Image: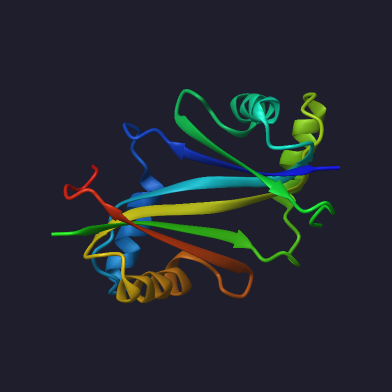
Length: 90
Length: 90
């Protein structure tokens, strides 16, 4: 049976201030890693699910993302689906 | 002057338990989103830096990742570099 490898990336919307990103940027510079600008920190939620990476899978994952994984008011969601090996990974 | 769009994805190593992923998985199932297995939660740190996305940029970002962005004992790092538009994004 086919399985799908799901990657959901959740980022703060561009207009939302990202204090965690600011803090990471300041730390990078303080430790001599120059040049990083506009640092933003997001989340990546990865899992497998049964079935192929088709339209229905995309719709189901979009519902998961909007209802559980992200805050649609503050965050944007990017969904990436790939065919996975037959056996679950873990 | 060319600029590079950097994406660093930080994930717990596969052998490390991920309680946050377990909790997300349980919540998905509780709310009727069936089928998600082996849920893992990671971080994505994104920024721009001056210069092209070449070997030197990759080496510099690898040092940032290992010294600041990740814990190399517990976490794996994936680095993705792309050519960015000339103007900084934000």
